[in-house]
Length: 384
Image: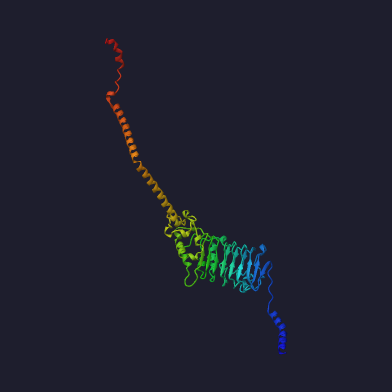
C-alpha cells in the first residue's frame, strides 16, 4: 500500500510542476514578415524579399543564430542597424546569440560606423557582392568574436580612398581568422590585414596586384607562436621583373602557405606573358630604367625554354656549315679546274685589252694628214 500512496503523491504534484514550467518558459518569437525560420533551438532565418526590404527586419527573434538577407535593397547600413537602429541605443543587445550574418547581393553602398553594434557573438560576417562606396573607419567596432569577414567583389567601386578606409576598419579585429578580399581591384594589400595577429587565410585573388614588396612579406611572418597566414594570389597581373625577386624567393621557401602558387602567372613584360612565376629563375629577372618608372620592362629575361631554342638554332647553323665544308672538300678538284679556267679566261681577256691598247698607241698606224686644197688645184698645171 505504501508504494501506491507514493505514486499518488507524485501524480498530484505533476500539474503544479507543469504550471511552473509554463510560467518560466517564454513563448517563441514569431518569424519576421517575408522571412523563413528553420531549426530549433539554433534558429536560422533567411530573408529574400527583393526591393521591398530597405532595412534589416526589426522583429528578428532574440534567439536567432544565423541570419541571411539576400537580394534586398538595403543600400545603407546605419549605426546599430541590428540593435534597433538608434545610435543612442547601441548599448542594448537585441541579438545576443547571433553568430552568422550573411548580407550578400543587397545593393549595400554605405556601411556606417557601428553598423553591427549589438552583435557580441557574431563570428562570421559576409558582405560580398555589394557595391560599397563608403566604409566607416569604425564599421566593425564591437565585434570581439568575429572570426570570418568576407568582402569579396564589394570594394571595387569605392575609389582610391576605400583602401585607407578598409585599413582603418580592419585594425580592431584582433580575433579575425579568415579575410576574403577577392575581386576588388586592389593594387596593394591593406597593411592592417597583414598585421592581424591571428589571421589564418587571406584571399586576395582576382585583384590588381603586381606583386608583394619586402615590407609586405615581412609583415606576413608573425613572431612567436602566432599562426602564419595562408595567402591566395591567383589571377593577379604579376610583374615579373626585378621587383618580383623577393616574392619569388618567398614562394620557394613557403610554397605550402600559397596553395595556388602554381597558378601565378606573369602579365608583364611581354616576353614572359602568361609564364608561370614559379618556373622562372630568380637570378635572371633583370631590370632596365623602366623599372624606376614602374614599367617593369626587363632586358635579361631569357628563361630555360628561350635558352634551349638559342642552343638548338646554333646547332642547326653549325650543321649547315659543316655540310657546306664537306661539299667543298669533295669537289675540290672540280673547283680547282674551274678556278684555273676562270684565271685563263681572265688572262686572255686582259691580253686582248692590252693588245688593242698597243695598236691604238702605235704612231705608225696613225692616219696621214689631209693635203691642203690649194696644192691639189695647181698640181695639173705643173706638167708633172
